[in-house]
Image 1 (cartoon, one colour):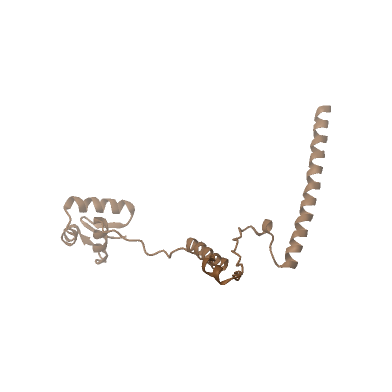
Image 2 (tube, one colour):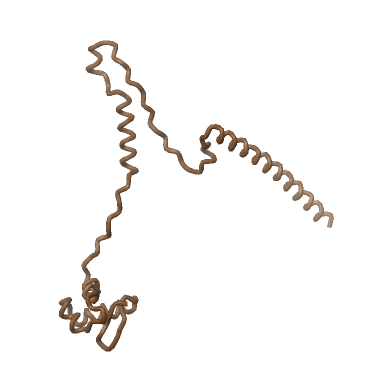
Length: 160
């Protein structure tokens, strides 16, 4: 029992120490929030978002002599603009277009079935799609399992 009491006292002491540290951290956070509110700028630690550094434009130096003007490198301002443009090009996303629908035998049969609201017979599917009996039966079986079509009567199917 004495050991248990000692362990409980040690745990209690650790909890008290942690609560003191927590109070200190909360006070620091409040100070940072007040400072950020007065400056209207969020500190990096509190913003939660990564900030993107902008390239600073440095004014170009004027050449001392006319001879140096020919051999002088391009102004730093233009180089900074190029860096910014490259960064924008890399991050710019292209708009997503419609996904290309491949013309598969299944798509042919389903597109043909869209024309008939009341249902289509297997013989009409065979004529309209130009597929064999085996292909059509496989397509109909697979599509009915997936729930894309329903069987109305023997040999007659319609879109679900």
